[in-house]
Image 1 (tube, one colour):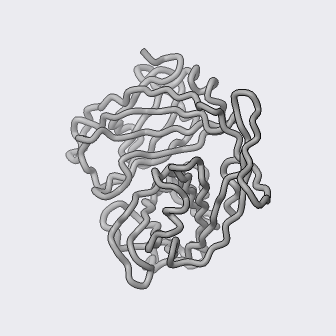
Image 2 (cartoon, rainbow, N blue to C red; image 1 turned 60 degrees about the vertical axis):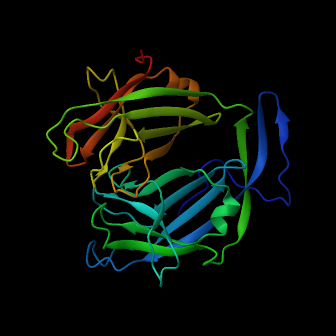
Amino acid sequence: MLGCVLVAGCADDALTPIEEGSSQTELREQVRYTLDAGPHQGAVPDSISLNAEVLMQSLDSARTLVTVAFEDTLDTPQIYPVHIHANSVDTTGSIRQGLGAIDNAARRMGRSVHLVDQPLDSLRALDAHINIHEQAMPLDTVLAQGNIGSNASAQSSLFQLERATEPDTVTYSLTPAANGRPEAPNGLSGTIRFEALTPQTTLVEVRRAADAPVTNQAHPVHLCRNPASAGGDIAFYLGALDGHPDGARSSWAVVPRPFDELAAFDGHVRVAWSNEALDTVLGQGDIGANAP
């Protein structure tokens, strides 16, 4: 089951900030929803439970961290796009918000994280549902789906979040790499951004440039060791990029390392075409100790 992404939850009847020097601990609101197996048309064995859970956590007054996770293990390296769609499951509707694609190669138990630029109250009022799709295009095969917002009944609870008053951030460049794929022969450019989430975790965003090509494919993103020019093993799986035209233009991950450690890391970020073609690099950028 999906646990609390940030820190252990606790109950109280008010959000009460407690000042502690340069950081503060406060109780923030969260809400959970359940996704049931969709009409997956034999995309996975019937013995596998495709139920999933959604956790929405209020990060601050304007942003919500949304985590989606399968309840069972899928033994596949595929990447599954996740979207908030308009209307209820029964009515269906177009994509309203792309969420983090689930890179199932990461831990063999699918999980995605995405930071949505909307307050939690706004998401709780949406006439919407969430779909987990088999692939970026076409979106016909739905692995799991469920109503959220005004279409679902869900009880909120509180969790404890320790955040710096002004979290540290740093931004690096994602440089496009020429490759043999006709969908993006010149690669993908963009940015890589670190933001201190808690004293022990860091938010990592990889954002495609506004003019980046639409690939209709979900792409794995990794934080690798060594400079990009030398290559290196995967140190951390980051959020996969959804190449659907209406998918999210950025990916997010919560890396279980302090900001200062990642900001000094001997590594680079690499975007590959797929888990089956990791040698086909679309973009990469030096970070930490290797950044220019």
